[in-house]
Length: 240
Ligand code: SF4
Image (tube, rainbow, N blue to C red; front, side):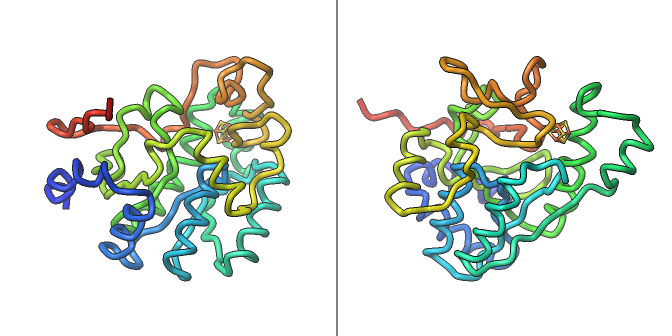
């Protein structure tokens, strides 16, 4: 599969998000799922997927530290799209984590906290799948700049599909408004990027959209989206 991905990767760069999703569903059937934390980009993918097939799989890593607005949105998604979100949890409850690792691990060692509550549960979930679909965009962080629409995920050992990787935030919001897609109400309160309550704050005017994630630290990623690009897969030349 890794070789097949390398062969078709450049071609896939010219596909629309819907074409990417269709190819993915046709290729992997029930062995592919959308991974989402229900940000604006994730909502675009969920809505697009629902128009292509009714029984698509959707999972989330529930850190048990999410905002009530996020849990509320999850309920609305299940109602609107008639699906059941697959929720994956850490092996440690928040109480067990405190007992084993001490109080407020997220403040002392956010990488370890993210490993326990996000990366390990994700790895367990991805072990069930042959491919996963994410809503990352290249312009979100430096690490994401190297992402392709279809790529081999060397970290987790399966195919990773990023249908809207070349979209801008403006395109995301245009889609949501045009299709009347539900979204997290925190976006209307200056939270462009939403994660756990302990590590997310509203951004101030002029700040980077991800400045509200792990504020006061150099951390920009929880470790889910390490991009390792195979050689010989340059992006197509942009139109002049
Ligand atoms: S975002 Fe913060 S609270 Fe959530 S898992 Fe990572 S460090 Fe822990």
